[in-house]
Each structure stands twice: as structure tokens, then as C-alpha cells.
Image (cartoon, rainbow, N blue to C red; front, top):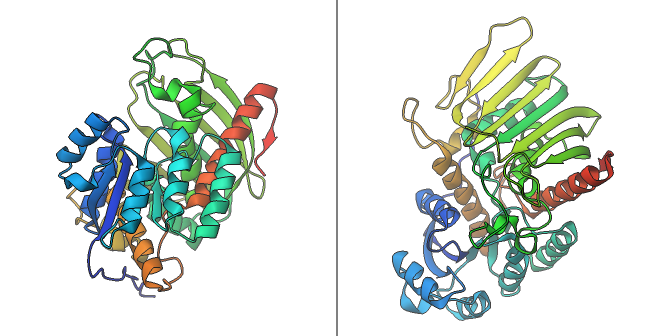
Length: 390
């Protein structure tokens, strides 16, 4: 049967985007901004890129913002942008974790749509409160689990939904880095992610662990119902964990594992997912994002590569930017995420309904589930027991 691709509705203009955080020296700000620019759906027109007025001015000028659109106070920015006829339509929040919720609330209160970095907040209670505020406001609220916007992750999700793997029987995800091997929480150069007041009570699980748990849920379509976690410090001494090993129980009593470390020597961005069913298993590596490994019982392994047709499910192809042989990578995934968010924001502002399943960007509900997972893992580690995520 011929597959029919459902394309995104065309844009009549670029939407206006603002940033809070992400100024000088902040890599994640540039990552967000480059994704927005590559999507061709946004113009970055305003920003409170730092709370320090001098750094805010320098960063704003480097981003070529108009002088009157450079702020150092996000509340001032929210009020002034909402009052402008050409004010921003969405804001990207790329600050330390403890600021995500108050910034989002300030912009939601004036009707501006939200794109927030992860984890959503520093606690489940705060995340749930933020979700209630979003429901009252009705704004679009995306959370930037950008790995889910890789085309081959979308392909994997579609294959699972189509039944190519059969009934899911086990799920395994891991994410290994080494940047925190020699990092401590002592001294003036200690990163903010090791400051509980700014980061929250978990270091590695709250950071890359939430990416791993979201990826597993996103592709498998199964929620995580219970966690058994062990936290460790395997790099230089620090108060928060830099490594964690977990057993997971997904919906339907499907077992799984999750392993994360930011003190794994020689690892850069080793995110890997394996989903196994009764007929076949799928495997995806973030450092080799353009291919999927499909291994069926009694059959030769298939390698599915990103591109048009040749095993690709039609709806995943609306995110393609290059033909096979012309690599796409993480920047393109960020662009896909910002593209989908732009479609959602435009539709909300124009009062238009979108076709079901057209968009798959992570929502505030995914952010809440991430915080539920983090808190369950913290309790499990402290009590040496399984903890339910319900």
C-alpha cells in the first residue's frame, strides 16, 4: 500500500522569538538559537541573555538584537514584549534549572508561548504547579528533549507503532559522557549543575538521565511505572551523583534498564537505545544518528539509513533536509524541534486545529514525567527499594 506523507502547513512569515539566558559562553543558548534559525520559522528579535546588564548588552549586540529589545530582567522583558505590536510570540528559556518555572510563569501570564530547556523544574511539585498554570493559560509549552527530533528516532517510533517489533518485551537505554570525571563542587569554578539550589537534588539523573528516560518512553510508547536506582560518584568527589544504574518497569510489566554516567572516561555523547519485541529488536546510537539496526528473529540484520523511501516510513520524511550521503546530525534535530514548535505556535495563534499525529514535540507533560522519574530515582537510591512513578 502506498504511503502518503502529511506535510507541515506552510508559514506566511517567520514567528518572533525571544530568549531568556543563553548569552556569552553558554553553549546551550547557541544550540537553541541555531536550531531556530535553521528551521526557517523563527526570527530571534529579543532577549534577556544575562541578568548581568553588561553581559546582557554584549550578548544582545552579538546576536544583533535592537538596543530596545535587549533586557537584563526577564519580568521586564515579558511585560514590554507583550505590550508591543511586534512583540515576541514565544520565548526560549535556557537558564539554570531553578529559574525555568518562574520565567515560564511570567511569560505565560502575558500569553507568550514557551520553549523550555530540560529538566522542566527542580522538583515534581513545582513541575505539576507549572503544568496547571499552562493548562489555565492555554499556551504552547515545549520541552527541549531534542534527541526525539532525530529523523531516525521518529522512524523507530513509527516502526514500533506499526508493529514491526511485535509486542515489546524489554527496553534498554544508556547515556555516557566523561566531562564530569574531574569536576568537583568545591571552589569558585564549580559548575552550577553541582549547586543544589540552582540545579535541584540530582546531577546526572536530572541532566542526561531525563534525556534517556524520555527517549525510551518516546520510542516505545510505554510509560515508566517503577524504578530501582543506585547512585554513585565514580569521578572526583562531589555531593551529587555522577553515575546511576537503574532497573525500570514499564507499563505492561515490561522490564528495562537505564544507565547514565558523566564520569565514563573516553565517552562524549554515548546515548544508545535498544527496544526488543517478540519479532525483532531495534537499536539506535546518537553518535551515529542516521542509521537504525533492525534485527528480526531468523533473518539477516537490516540497516535502515536516513533518506527518502528505501524503508523509511512516509511521515518521518517530512523532517528530511538532505538526501542520503549528505549527513544530518544534532543541529538538524534541533531545527526539526523548532520547526514543529513553530507549527504549533502558529496554529494556536491563528485558531487552527492541526491534523492528529502531525507533531511529536515533547510537551510540558513530558517534562512532568521527567521530574516524576527523577524524584522516584532519588527516593529509590535513598531507600534501596523499588519506587513507583505514579
